[in-house]
Image 1 (cartoon, helix red, strand yellow):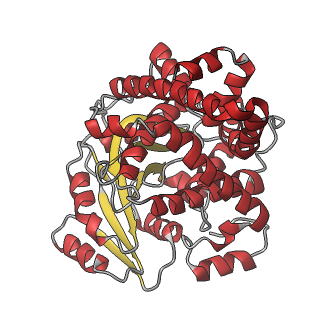
Image 2 (cartoon, rainbow, N blue to C red; image 1 turned 120 degrees about the vertical axis):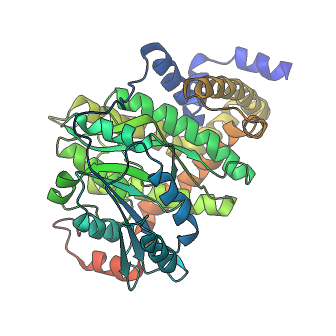
Length: 421
């Protein structure tokens, strides 16, 4: 270990800068330190003369097992939803029966059933047309909210410029496996810390699909969600392009379940990464560093993706080859020393994040943090490299099973003159 530290001490500062940029951990350090120095914008939950009416839409495909906890958490809110609408999107399990039972008990106001699966976006778009609230809260069927979450999200819309807002997300199944433990730490860093500082800068790029709130009249006026893959990112970027503000509310907490296996995690992230690349660069042309007449926050959100995500990911294999050529037999020692450095930075990040966001530190989370730098900087980055490469070469998002085959075929046959709805 002493030899590795001595090797790092003798390394050119530029080499160290490249290493920490490639392996991603210090990105969260900058976010956390910025939040600690400048503070987070707190959402207000004091009652006003006229509370907004919130319609909740829960699209689900074979998600009946998670419906009851989700509905129960919504019924416990300090700002009670005006209505709860469940859309059964062609489920083949007991989802419809569970939803109808909830409606019979009076805890759900409407159940809409699709005979065949149409996809998450068409399900939400259909629900919005039946909703009566001023604000629309879209919720996955496995999302459980803290009691003040809806009120805190709704408070963001007191600014008439805001058209969408999303809340903070933690994992409900953190202890189920090593993979969920790692995801729990990742969510705290990338969502809680990362999006908080982006919100301060007005540079939020994506409203989370698990729980986001929209202004209903704006949602309908702009045609709702795109029915292709990556609809949450596409709609968020569309709102930004149209001049609306989107917010992240760090103290509006919800919990959702993450993939429990490494294969399931890779499939989820492959879909997210392919969609992000396709939407950002092929649909919205965000590859260039600067666009004429672009607002500064829009430039920031694009540069955040390009500088901290795209470039380090595509450069990873070339950087590793460069390290081997530069250090020769000492390459492994150099990378080991960098890992130790990143590990200490990761511990600092975790401690600061747990304090700032008032989350308790479990022994399980502390254990997973020992391999978090490898998970974040190598495992996910390698997976992202293959996802980006496959999208660039083969356009694999066109075959994404998240969109039903018949909808995907219709999309591919539709001229590119506009978004299909």
